[in-house]
Length: 199
Image (cartoon, rainbow, N blue to C red):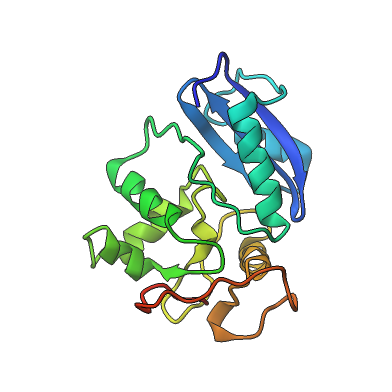
């Protein structure tokens, strides 16, 4: 996702205005909806305060289109999105790579993510890494739940309610309960080995 210049872009989705920022090495930040456009812009500019708002180059525009579609209920795969992981600790990068493999409609617990990266006692550290996630949606931290399938610790505006809404759009009810928003466009089938959970 090499680009000629860095920039950022705000765009509307089914859950509100999201945004992303990019540079020559890939995406540098993704922002979920905030309480205002100014707050969204501030989150995007936290890492690179001098970049300007502009129309995204084609590779970034493809990510925008897929985020919009995903949040409208389509089972889009964001694996093509290239992330600039400069400055991201190695442990966090490993957590993010594992989290990116969780498909829409499926969830893992913090402990399951910890086990998959070979650190089975590191569930709390996984939670901290996801709390610092600069790439929500692309690194779908909303698909990682506390033990027992309970929503916990979502730092975006709206907190757990935002997390629940995103999971409901994807067909993954929390805590085994009914879908919070009724019948939504798709629900993933459980993996045959039973390793990945749905809520």
